[in-house]
Length: 516
Length: 59
Image (cartoon, rainbow over all chains, first blue to last red; front, side, top):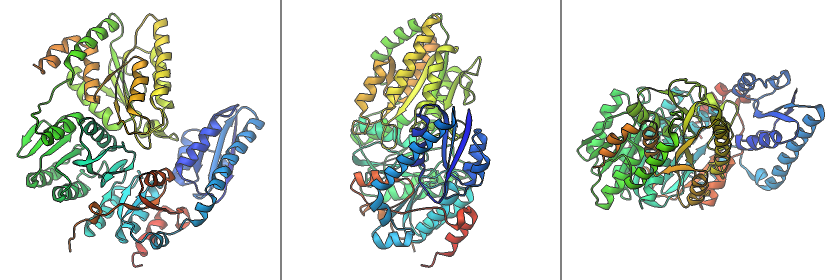
């Protein structure tokens, strides 16, 4: 194999375009691996880490594109570079007029769009803080999708935002809704009467999708980023957003999707929650269930959606292990038979981080210690949950919600492992892969064949975050997974509980008992 | 002094800095959007870029 690099100077492109270029090159004959990056210092480090760093590449700057390929022959490499060049120039011709017309500075953009009220920022994290600060100082609200923004920058940005009564959603804000319109990675839902504040993108997606299934829509979904409730950031944006939703006439119920909260922040949070005169549901993973005035603390994302919908629809609600007990009982017998005598280890392979953490907590409570992340199938004795969106699995690769390949490679290997149950999520919506179920179904079929050759069965259990109006179509994705034999549940929490039940049938008393 | 955040009442109107796919989604939703032709400032040095942002707050 040869390692070859080309530098295309002064040709800044966004990471989605670069990812498409890399995909095109990878699919060429004779190409084993390809990386296409802007030559920023952090990208240079990534290239070195994945063994694709070259002396030529190291000489490039942040405005230059580095293309490095591992090719069988010199002509394979040359042909791959040509194909990438053709793709990029086709795109540039297509966008030619628009590109020329694009403003180069925020001020010239504002002259063109004087009514602008939001800056959506998704550039590399090292530069994102500077642009967000510029935007706030021009009285724009900020949706900051970029990650790897230093915490000190986050604090400065949020202070600036609060001083100006603006929203600073993020950094690392994957999903938001303003006036019912989605931002970033989002599920297509109707505008409605539930307002959300969310420290997690997939958490907000799961709640919004479940609310949609229950006939409720979203007024606003304010993403605050995963660090907002830390001691350093002090919950600045969470607290301000809760107050905003409390004052918003279109919001009739509030859901807070929280992360573990620092005690000093918790105190402030409880004070704000106590002053809200609307039904409010809080899901904070790991925090105990409780009722505090008008605030209900629940354990899972689907409980949060169910409770909010029940409040609004005037129904009584109590948490339960499964929505459809009869269906679960019949599947339980099937699963028990399927696993009879075979391996009973669970591997949870997740694309949504919050869903992975939720399953980890549920399985831990039901089954004891569970390995989290690490090498797939490496935990010899333990069940394992992997968040494939974690930095450890995405170095030089796109997020698994966009590119299903990494997870599918791991699923395909399950047939050779000591795992008996695969626990999966599928996150649909804008931004996600256009057919995430297809590759999963294919990989699963391969894994099952391998398992069968060893006289074993592989049980697959999962849930889909999505709505009928999502571009991928919820029904179509569900049908593909069901066709591949995945036992699907209305939520991730229910899927996780069923996985526990499958490997430890004596939990039936606990889980079904809860329903009596 | 404090004033209510206007974003809840106004139609979204967006300046997109970064991924084109997001601007495409805004347009598909009928949201007015201008795409900034962004590239690293300060010669690509993040620290310098941040200092430049701090300095240009008066225009």
